[in-house]
Image (cartoon, rainbow, N blue to C red; front, side):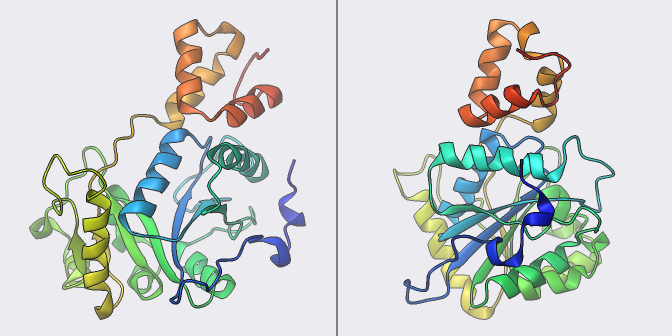
Length: 270
């Protein structure tokens, strides 16, 4: 088990982005509780990486997010599950960021982005959030500063519709001439291997004018950590074949193995 207190600044980021690209590395920052991390998270992360033409994607587990009163599992355990999932994912572009490791602090996004820039100078950062978060962005601490620190990548969420004319005045002013809607960049159905390319071209065309808010098409993800926890709570030994299959289809093999070995979320496990 990882002890968060043992994570010194020297080993927070074991694989720093290399400046072999002839330009600042483009880094995605994907925060969440990941309680537990599932294949939908990884699919979303890869989806953003490809559509935004990123070089790296950092998975950022929250130790104590201001908007959540409690988490089911401690930070170190959730980090272990993420590490297990990334081993199975086997893509060196995907790393873990430990910036929010201190559970005694409320980690506000503006502070996280400032610290991330200190750890990763001379990089272009793309911070990922859901449409539900974006529509309430004016309630976040120092929300006006976020766009100064990073590009904001917005993913649609069910029941949260974006209509420019319906934005709060604060958000309308903040996003004026800065919002790039990529949801309709490519006609449907797209030709093979063109959707991400065209989206990336639109991204690069907008970037010389500074950081932007990018709205991506919704990735096809039909799984939630809440549903997974509800299944695991019953105890793996009590699940039927279809329920076990669902877990194997939504969790990476090593993550599920770790959860079962540690009897996480479960009343009974075998």
